[in-house]
Length: 337
Image 1 (tube, rainbow, N blue to C red):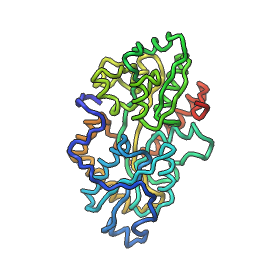
Image 2: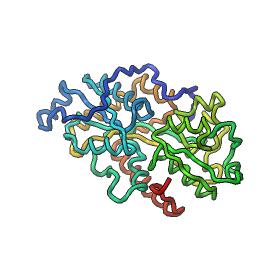
Image 3: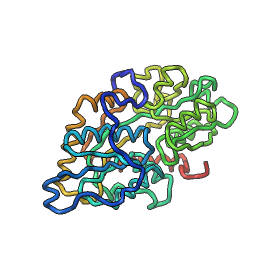
Image 4: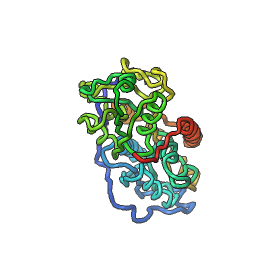
């Protein structure tokens, strides 16, 4: 990204949050799978977007912003349904069992595709080959932060601490965990992971000194950074973000740790081609709306609105690359924390 948008964490500028959501199970599928239904898609039936994380978090708000735009374009209600658990795997299981009629979708976190499989046994994580991919959404950078009172400002400070470091993660099998595991393995720092359930509790733990550092998505941490309540040590972006011009990337600091969160819209496997095209056209039109673009800017998100098959190829490459570095540094993402 090449702009500083003066963001605040997960602001929904110009976007209503009156979209319906439920924490109950889907309780069946809406719409049908016949050719006639496909030709009339979406008809008068609503579309449900599953989210595998809690309401109010980054993935949830991204889903709501995209869902509102899609609803405007297709003229039917698009509701967001939260089914948190297992870094999104529970929602993915629900999606896999839904009718492939275009009426059930999911905002799928890239970490579930290319990091979680490295933290669980073979076959235990969802396989993206079992889904259709509608479109990419956005990329989000991670930043390693600490409380100002810790006295840490660089990776070298952490190495010189003279004691084991504790680091908070947003969960097992997440980019937050992988970014820090790789950084500490490459720098030779003795560090212990403390997993939390999402960015908000991880942020709270860092602010309260329960852990020394934590890797958090930048959109969730930027307000505290700008207020001086958190000290950024490094970002895990490919290049130094201009909204943190004085904070080096881990790559600049000499470590091969480029890790980003990415998100895409998934569907059950077997959605008819014309339904898929209607969905893709609807999302692309939503992406062009000023309100959606403002949402991305306010939350420091990099648009990544690629075709579904491009997303599949990229995420498969990420899985291979991360598997290679995890093996190289003998990191056990699913081990005792």
